[in-house]
Image (spheres, rainbow, N blue to C red):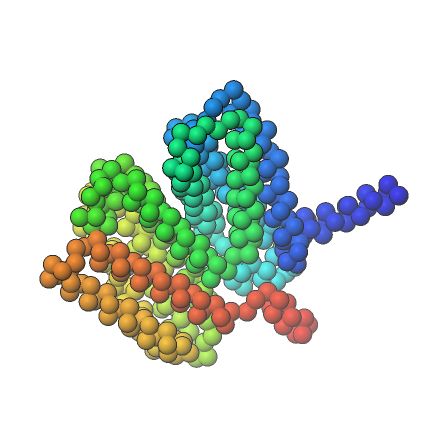
Length: 374
C-alpha cells in the first residue's frame, strides 16, 4: 500500500510539476505550489528578521518596505521560473506552446528581462502603495514579529502565484495589459514622489529631470515600457493575415513602426530633458510621428484591418493635433497635452494588439493542424 501511494504521488508530481501548462489544471496547480513554496521559505526568514522588533507599517526598515523590496525579488524569480517552464514545454511538445513565440523564434533574453522587470516594479510599487494606504488607515499602529512575518509571507506567496500564472500564459494581449498596469503604477509613483510638487507647471518630462530625486522611477518606467512595446509589437504583428506580397510589406512596415515607437519611448527615459534637451525632444517627437504615420497609412498597409479601428485611429490623431493647437494658443499647458496624448497613444496600441491577436492561432490549433498534416 505504501508503495502504491508513493507511486501515485510520483505520478502526480510528474504530471503537474514536470509538465506544467499542458492543461489548465496542471498550470494552476504549479502556480499554487510556487506560491506555497515562497510562503514556506519567506515565513521563517521574515520571523527571524523581525524577531524582537516592533515594526512600522511604512518608512525605512518598515514591514511595507520589506514586503515591497522582497515582492520585487519574488516577482523576478516567479517570472523566471514560468518562462523557463514555457521554454522547456515548447521543446518537449514540438509546438508553439508559448503565446509569445514565433515559429523557430524564441523570446529574446532582453525581452524576458524587461517583462520580469515590469512585474517586479509593479509588485514593488504596488505593495509600497498598499502599505501607505494601511499606514494612513491605522495611524501609529505597531506590527509585531509573528503577524508581520505572516503578512509578508502571504504577500510573497500572492506575488509569486500571480506572476507565475501570468508569465506562463503570456500573449501579446495579456502583455499589453501588463504594460498598461506598469505604466499607470510607474507614472503615479513618480508623480507622488516628485521632489517638486509643482512639476506639472513645466511638462511631463520634468519628472525625469536629474534634480528630481525620483527621476529614476519615471525614466526607468519609460525604458522598460519601450522594450515591452517593441516586444509586443513584434509578436502581435507576426500572425496578422496577409494574402499578397504588398500586404506582407505593409505588415513589416507596421512592425517597424511599432518597434520605433518602443525605441523612441525608451530613449525618452534614457535621455532626460535637462541633460539632453534636443535629443530628448527629438525622440519624443519621433514617437508621435511614428504613431501618426502608422495610423494614417494603416488602411493601405493592412487592408484586412477593421474599418472601425481605422476610424478610431484617425479620431485619436485628430485629437492629438487639436491638443497641439490648444498648446500653441496657450489654452493648455504642455503637461496636459503630453498626458492626454500618452493616454491616447497607449490605448490605441492596446486596442491594436487586441485587434491583431484575434486572428492569431493558438497552440492547440497549431498542434491539430500538424496532426492532420502528419
